[in-house]
Amino acid sequence: MSVSKVTSLGEVADAEHSAPHAYRAAVIGTGFMGRVHAHAVRAAGGEVVGVAGSSPDKAERFRAAHRAGRAHADALELLGSDDVDVVHVCVPNHLHAPLSLAALAAGKHVVCEKPLATDAATAREMVDAAREADRIAVVPFAYRFHPMAREARALVAAGSLGRLTLAHGGYLQDWLLRPEEDNWRVDPALGGPSRAFGDIGSHWCDMLEFVTGDRISAVSALTARTNDTRAGRPVATEDLVSLQFATAGGMIGNAVVSQVSPGRKNQLVLEVTGTEGSLVFDQERPETLWAGGRGRSTVISRDDPALSADAARLATVPVGHPQGYQDCFNALVADTGAAIAGSAPEGLPVFADGLRAAVLAEAVLTSARERRWVEVAAT
Ligand code: SOE
Image (cartoon, rainbow, N blue to C red; front, top):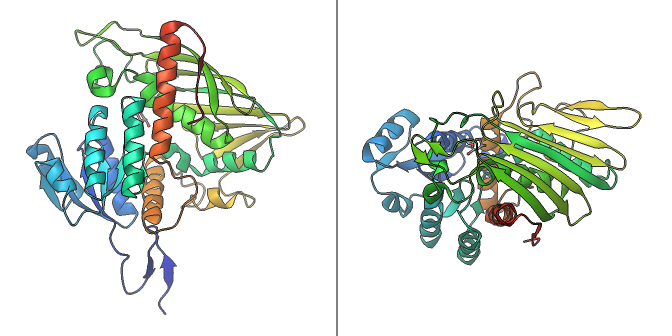
């Protein structure tokens, strides 16, 4: 008996007789994110038609190691190929706009790594180009795809926390702790003028606004760096951010962002407080969600029978088999495929969310530079 099913790419296929039509992806970039995207494309039932990198040799090594169809020395040649539907841009930040705009001009859908662009004006241009090309254009704020991040959002939307009053938390790492540790993100010409906030503070703010449905309306920020040089070169971008904010919906809050906190690896933590309840989402412990109440507090697991439908759909393996980072990307690509196939999956992060992050990054840098509160448009 054939069993039809809606595949992860939004195509209906007969489970016994045919695979879904391919999600034919080009991956541009052969580093860690290129590997994550390539795996997510295949996990979602698609194929990596080709790969391009910073050198022909890197592209060929990636092709061989990650089962890509072919290696291209020229990214523009690959993204313009007739057998490519979606271009995954996984290169340093300064190349996001030219490659995404070229892909959109070639009629391709785009998944472009965050930050979408190194400034808000360019991000806005990318949003406009995607709309004019009528293409699906996604930016991987992938932590939205942890099931318990969705459950947090559903609890807020259901009014379980009451009126939201406070949000706080932060995003802490230590991979740039030492002065000799350097990376293209440190160079504003490649990474953009904001590093710690642009790179990971953007994730925290996206999670805040995604979970609460609220919008930051004003920021007061301080930035700092622990090393004035890295690998012998002067550093112009921040290691640390301390951020206060107010929201359009009446919350106040703060967040700290660091890439130099010893022992903190990838700790994104959001706590939301309301008049009836609280919640804590910890990205390093994503299998559960703490739900606080005056009389009783609980830890919700992703196999809870009362879990929201949007959270449950992302729980793909039984509890006790932890889901993680790659699962988030797999779900993001699956939902991108569903969007391309014409359905509108809940919570897909699109270029407008990338523009939002760029607007917030500029407000944070302005506030820190001028030592004042900066109003932020709702975008
Ligand atoms: C480095 O800070 C990094 O890889 C970020 O670029 C990612 O967006 C984040 O998810 C993990 O850390």
